[in-house]
Amino acid sequence: MGKNNWNKVYRLSLLEDDTHRNIRSYRFTRLGFIVTIITVFMVILGSLYCLIAFTPLRTTIPGYPDAHFRREAVNNAIKIDSLESAITRWKLYSENLSRVLSGDNTLNLDSLLQAKEAADSLER
Image (cartoon, rainbow, N blue to C red):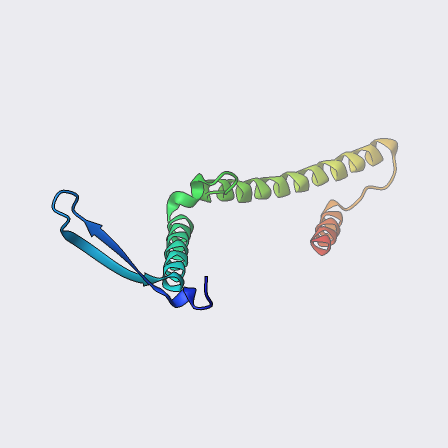
C-alpha cells in the first residue's frame, strides 16, 4: 500500500452472466467511497430524526408524554391547588370553632386566608 491509495481509481463493473455484456460500470476512489458512505448514513439518520421528531410517531417512544398526559397533569395541578386551599380553610374554620367553644376570641378568617395565600405565592 502506497501513500496515494486513497486517490487510486477503482472500477466496479456489472456484467450479464450469460453474454458477459457490460450492464453498468462505476469508477470510484477509496476516499470518494468512504465520503459517500458517510453522507448516505448521515442522510438516513437525519431523515429518521425528522420523521420521529416532527410527526406523531414521537408518541410511540416510551416515556414521551403526549398532549393528553400533559393536559391531564395541568388539570391535576389545578385540582391539587384548589384542594390545598380548601384544606387550609377547613383547618382555620376548625381552629376558629374550637376557640369559640373554649370561649376565646375568634379569628378573622378572611385576613388569615389572604395572609396564607400571600405566603404561599412567595414560596413559589
